[in-house]
Length: 404
Image (cartoon, helix red, strand yellow):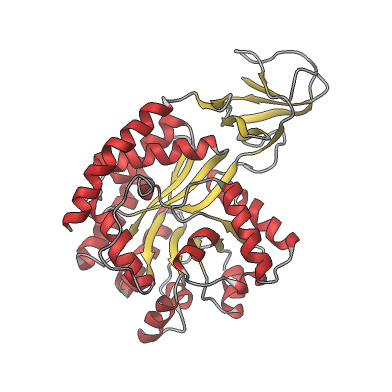
């Protein structure tokens, strides 16, 4: 049992977690019901752990000296081809483990307690989700994982291997903090047969789809060339959009398509920093649904930074503050669906995922009743060792990437 208390005054707010659930959240009684004593945080506010509803842990080493492409990309496809698709092809088990641990550590220190990760490592597919899941379990973060099946390197064989990894992981995973879903990279990188098989796998295993959708206009053009109204219609017509599916980006959906996604029960994930960085546009039509949450698309999982980017971009596009504020808190909803317990409200019976944040950011973080950050430091691993491993692994990764 753990206790978070806001200051030494017993009248301040207190969170008590038994096992992985909250048993009390409200005025403290002054009694110490924890095993190790209360976690005291002066002038702090206890808030639910943040949720990053779409990210890529495999890219976390990029700030550690990733070489620039030989030629500056001129469009979004060239950004993928010259940077991110070269990076994911260079990944092996060692570099993926270092990337995951580094990303997770930074996420927890920022008060983020749940990640929806969309993974690709074409040179290391089988077992890749276990590497991510083991890192999540070790450091103590919740995660919803998938492998993004694609045909962009080796055709249908590659896609089949990706879907097999999703299936293997979902059936074998027993980690309490981790769930698995089915993933597709994006519809423009897969055939109709792969999309059908992905949908069949969702139905067989009772899980949802996680996919990039309409991030760039080329995704729309590709679907139309194949005879569909757009990528949303293509995925739906081929049976690959069960209710609760995670649709990342959705920048180039029109209003009718957003309303259709809403009726299908899908979650639309806005990624402001990534969309601005890649210059793919702003998803103006997301005003047509309340089922919008925030992701970082591989940027650090500091959701306060992502929220600030959302407000800057949203207000510049004449969105209302209430609408933007709702999106910043909505990630708890799809996360609650995947874990089967409330993850957002700090109420008895909800998951004990919380952060006590002061003026200098999160001081203490609890996930499932386990204190994973105390006094601004990880309790589950050595922060310096994790960063040292990342800094050591990064040059190996860049060398392999350069050779591609």
